Length: 264
Image 1 (cartoon, rainbow, N blue to C red):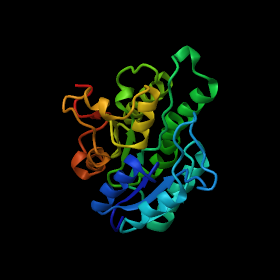
Image 2 (spheres, rainbow, N blue to C red; image 1 turned 120 degrees about the vertical axis):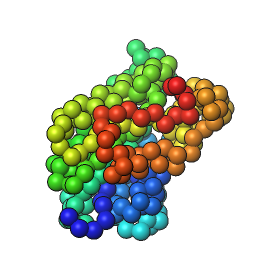
Image 3 (cartoon, one colour; image 1 turned 90 degrees about the vertical axis):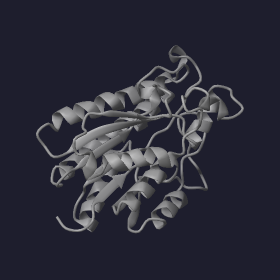
Image 4 (tube, rainbow, N blue to C red; image 1 turned 120 degrees about the horizontal axis):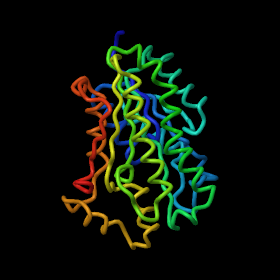
């Protein structure tokens, strides 16, 4: 293979996904950046009446800020969308070296037994099935790379229980089990599979979490971490970027907390 490495990133239009795109761009990656990219004239919402999805303009702006990136509208709930994104990576750039599953939504509020079917299904479909769909789309291509990398974003909620967020936590726990099992299936290959579990980041999802807990803002979350602060998404993205690098070749099946000590 020739040329600089290539990565596909889901959920790249804003927040952590946009930060991951920037981190990989700085490391010389050519990028295929995907997001659901809703029509701003009729913005869709996740499982509840919370925050809207990112728009095509959001995704296009992130791509324009990278040296070489293609913006692709893709819904992680749809296998063919991610198959197409990987196809674009291979067709345009001739290879795929890394796949990063960032796309996710959050919803909560009632206790688990009062959680409605729509909320449950949406969270599993986006947060867990979306990772599975990227695995199926990307891993066959990664197996052809000199050192393929698969990285999925879970959450601190994927390693510990959180009240009023049971459906979200279940999906994120599922991501941990899924990717660690992927690493086992990849034994003997040159592809690694790892999970990053962020803590409270300065994103729209954290603002929605504050709403779930009836808080006036996000500052209270800082008090639950050893470092007593909210993370910048760029800090978490640096961990993702390292896991995609040759330097991380000895790490697979790992669950990496980047949470300012929240789960410490």
